[in-house]
Length: 104
Image (tube, rainbow, N blue to C red; front, top):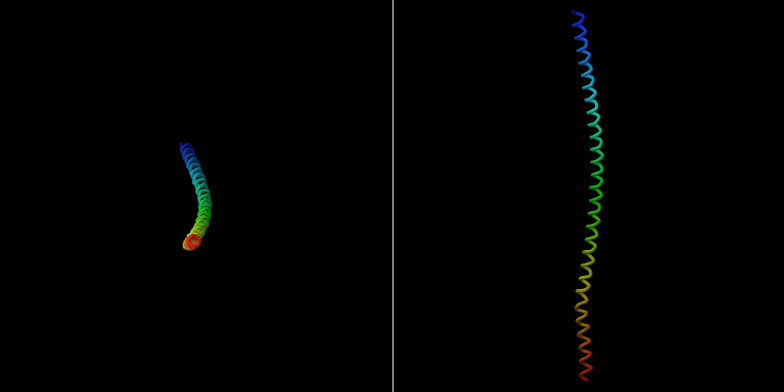
């Protein structure tokens, strides 16, 4: 009977060792997956940072273009403001010339 009991205990120990090995293997696999996920996440974060930099550069370019457009509009408005009195003077001179010719 002792032989049977010994075999039974040895079998249980072997199964327990097999279970522990399987469990250790599963943990190693899971750790490897976590490492892969961490690597993927790091790569994604780097790509996101690159995209953010690109977007910020585009925003700067847009703002610079808007500033240029605003400056151009300001210049055009100033030119029109300066031209208006000159046009009035020109028209006044033309009217005076017409009046002079009609009165003579």
